[in-house]
Length: 499
Image (cartoon, rainbow, N blue to C red; front, side):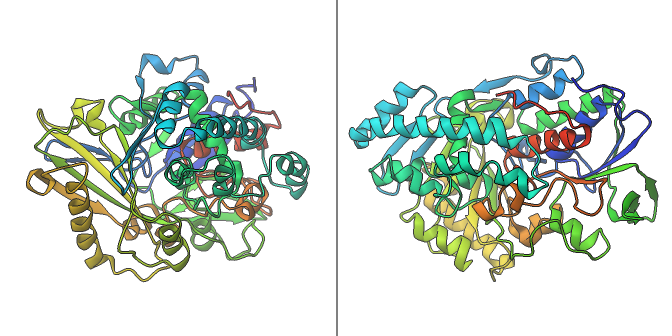
């Protein structure tokens, strides 16, 4: 246990009140820092905003809770229990897949139920799945337990991990790892989608990310009653109880550097806030390009590959859809080719795949009585492509509504209401996301661990980074864990994985 007086008398400014910034503010407050959390929006959560329209509620960003112990830990830092404030409900199935041929596959909470589902497609893949799960556990034991919470600010930190990663064949891609164990093309798709949850193309993402599969199997998939917004709200209340100063509409224009140290920040209204330590919780490249004096970032000078963009469609229906799962993965007719067009060619395709969130499957408070709330996420090219979103947004809305109406949401066009959407342009303007990418840089092998943006700047030793673009990466477990990495860098004390 790190001493609560470690940071006593020292002023910390955290820029960005997403999950990474919140977790950092709490962890460093617990070791004594005087914390100010600055958010340019008017509410906490970063991409985890909440939208209210016509009686419908929508979590704007993350909707899947895995590794729940990471949130338990934030309350335990202050001798509190998460369960006194929040209710995490386990889901079953984890995800329901709807394939283009009309077939359906439920990825279930129990292994035996999942095997039963797999056998409907290919009996031989049941044994293959068990082998894949065993491999995923081995990767988890190294990748999550030993690497996720460790700093990678020196190349040696990565080199000494190479033997273990080679033994686990992490030089392969997720798709290669999955395909070596499973044969049915649709089951291969179902167990290859995990990198997309953190912004990666499974055909390019390092097999380290197969650990996500075991993470789900080990801990489950949960929904927070009241939504992710309720989780943010309770974390905000925890920060308030601990005396963390939260400033909204605080747009940081500059991190002030003197003698290679960050001494504070200057806001857009020219207010100066002094600091002994600065942690940036947004897209690192945004910081390097716009908030710091021009310098080389702490990443080898290679061209960075950014994640796909996201088009998110929000709507309600004045009809109930009780047969639709809480989480649905609606797969289009193509998989590898579609992802190549999105990630590599960066142009809009005629087809698409979708993630459909129906929170009212679990929590009726998200919609008026007799109604449903929906959130549909469609991977699209980021802004490095030339999509004209001022017109394409409406076109894509109509295409998605038609596709869902013809499959899992009959009569949708006549019962849909309160429709709106976000495009990569909104991600760029609202969240200062580089290229409007949904998850910062891609989780390729050459952009992981030491090759990712470092959690501590190489030249400014009191400037730190947390969030999707830094180690360990995107997704709620990744961004919350990045706060642990910063704590270890500051204290020199290892912070456990908890898993």
